[in-house]
Image 1 (tube, rainbow, N blue to C red):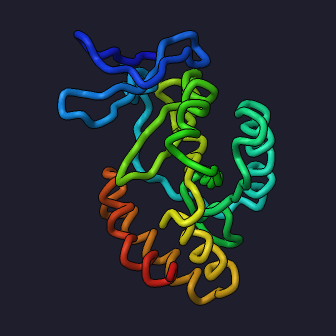
Image 2 (image 1 turned 90 degrees about the horizontal axis):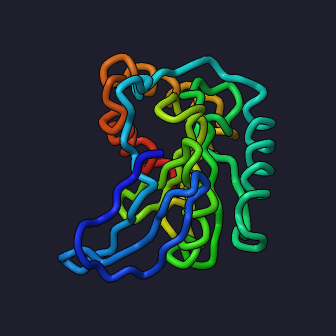
Image 3 (image 1 turned 90 degrees about the vertical axis):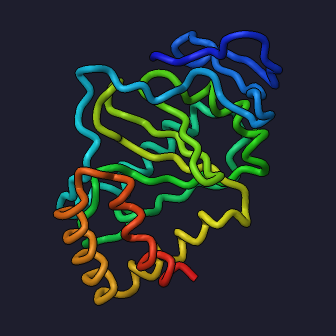
Length: 211
């Protein structure tokens, strides 16, 4: 899996090999902010599109999530993850969704867990992303291929856990599910080519029912 290494002298916090034998590590950049070497999303020229494609509900998604949790649980260091949750639209019955499983893993401290999780998970078409302070491991079916799962890692108290409230409300309220399904279908039709804009456009609705 392609990655990158900073040029010149940097202050390394830690370094380790990823699952492909490549070097990953955390270091301070010129501004003093941390950055990660390796584990980068550098799509190959023959990479598949990363647009939004909604599919009908699949009743096997919960079983797929359970299998994936077992698979990941066998890879990460024992005792590191305190709790696993399947959430997002694939965790809600009768709701169309992108065919990408969303998992949420509870750790004591995300910054400390990163030193173990990045080398254990990254490589083999798994990438580390960080956005708005949240850590996400993006698993693909193959390097440059479609997304298979998103593993979100956070300590208790992180705002991302509000996603469980939203999941449970959707599970319990058929009218809310229909409203959300209609919103997603409309946004996928208009913003489907831009995954980030699609996600942001759902934000107000999601936040309203996550409190």
